[in-house]
View: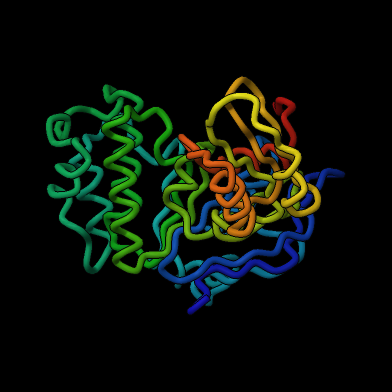
Length: 307
């Protein structure tokens, strides 16, 4: 990691007998998008609020852009932007007024009008915020978080309630922030969003970090994948099974539909191709099915519903 923007070490936060955070350690790179994932009640909100300086930990250390958010909040606040899921928008104010007000707090803000245009809010710029739709309020919250040109921005569920066009616009904006060197800390329940945007993913469950790494590292580590292809039905798979590494299984799941299961690497693909070639078989629709980030998330945190 070229530089560290966020470093959390052995963080503990208790509410009575319950540990919301139980020894959390993680880091986020400068100018990178880091997604923090977890089921409801996993500790994400508590962690992010401590990093933002809104809550204090019991033990452990946090450094945000080299500063302690609990003790050096006055120095840190001008450097970060915070997007809240709820609150922060005055119901009687208008989007243009809100954005111009927040922009006035910063030395070199983005142009509020351009930001309103970019997020599709120009037509409602003069409408009281209480009359905005949920998606419009969400886009305004995103604009408020980034108008001050922060070095780091915390985005809490930034695309909740957005239609596909607005979600795509938000994703493009987040990607632009990354290209401009802004560090993005993203919490989201959209696993596709994290897989698409994040350089690094941290999965938290029951107050502990259960996995962290690049999305590709998490989906490929120890993964049992499937190689599938189609050919004429009834091929004798005994020779293929013998050629494959130990632990791999080859079977015909339906007439002409063949599957090889296990850790699918270059050697396995080569063995399948050679076996087919030796029998004069041209495999059709050959593809490798990998785990998604959602598969990894459910494997680590379980499939039961959380309140």
